[in-house]
Image: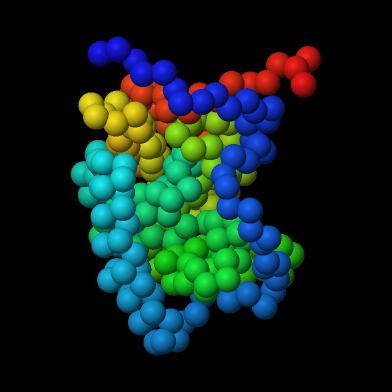
Length: 264
């Protein structure tokens, strides 16, 4: 099958820090007063209403209709039945990435580590915490609360989703470098982790590719290594699994090329 040419080429300088999403939101400060875990019945009811009854059906329809989404290797989740775990995914869709973990990991309850932008929108920002958004903290006190929230959700048997690339590169078909610090929670909690890789595939009657989201794992921290080396080894396992899985893509919709040093 002849490969379609990408619709455009995007030039980057730093694969860890360049951002290509189109949000343009001024993020709020996530300080020590931000509530990460609300144990009230009201919060649990609103979580069930927005997450199970609204977001999941809407996300399914959006991903299936717009991206022709498919999901592979969900059977691997049987290996971690009844316990919490972490999932690491490539960050390539502004609209779909909030939904793909929920659909891939169904029926597990998912919480996603997000940029403060996601809780800063005038209306939707008040809803995203019920959808599982855990915004990155802005100060030390908030960091302590954030870390405790991650531990709490994990111990409750939930899934914590991490996009270690941090920045959205729409339709990127390769895996960007990310640091071992992304693995601090599974190392600290001796928790299983999965790689979740979204790949892009040619459609017969559309230039826009369809998505296939794959699970690989579970991966476990090596208890024989010291913590820093343990995080590095786990990062390498997950990164290599994502790189290998990304080769399933057969359609490049947007091409990303590194800007030459002497270019303007």
